[in-house]
Image (tube, rainbow, N blue to C red):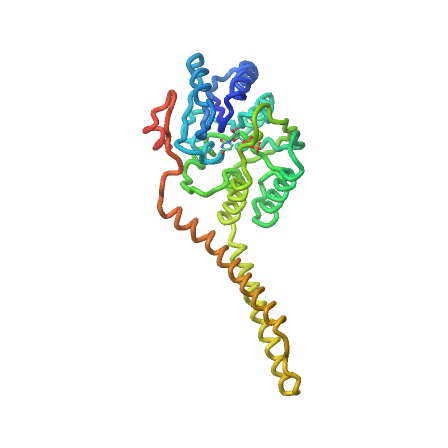
Length: 315
Ligand code: UDP
Ligand code: MG
């Protein structure tokens, strides 16, 4: 059995098209397949559309989350519910060609446990989106040292059941699934493809969601910002002592230091840096507190061919 997992936020128009393509592609493959759609609390008719499709196709199941949690949480919800020997995670908007699943399955049959479909080229994205994405993946690979993550990014991948079981053991709430998947290891391989433009609708990834993902990814895998804070603090203190020495020497040479402006610069720079550092500490602290509450990552509002109570606890 092969599981296809699709997080969907306002994808009512795209899902039937994706289903037709999936059917066409997977019919060629002898193995049975299931399609799990996780409706991330869409404000359109996404869930009704999936319900209608599920009435005619027994291999479709779906859940609707009780609020918008972001696609990474939606995918993790799907991973808890799937029963395939492997799972392919793909978006609903037809940006990722379903035909590539065949190549991904071939790599998996050859023993690869994580097959990344990495984008060689991205159609229909603004320069800002591309720049932001490039910076994010550069940061993850070179600063946070998550080396497995494809340099140009990926959100279309296949994972083996063993990896699914490993991922299901992680209960963290504020996490980037892609970074976690790179971090867990196993046998990983990348194949490249050209990402198409979105078929209908617009991206559900708002700027604030992207910003949260960046901070989540850094705080979850690195203490580098805290180390940088210590180094800056040390250097500033050192500079302060040296400057004090210069001021005192000048005092004895009868050239007392002058200047309200220089004092203000120091007060503002040091004050600003201290607040920034408090903010960074706060980001770590808030996440520690949030995890310690152990709230469920998501709640299920509706389910098709799944028992919402059982599915929530099934691992
Ligand atoms: N998505 C989701 N919840 C969200 C945002 C997006 O489930 O809050 C889904 C979306 O429906 C799509 C996939 O995640 O199937 C990828 O999102 P999108 O296409 O909006 O992102 P982009 O392609 O711009 O990175
Ligand atoms: Mg998309």
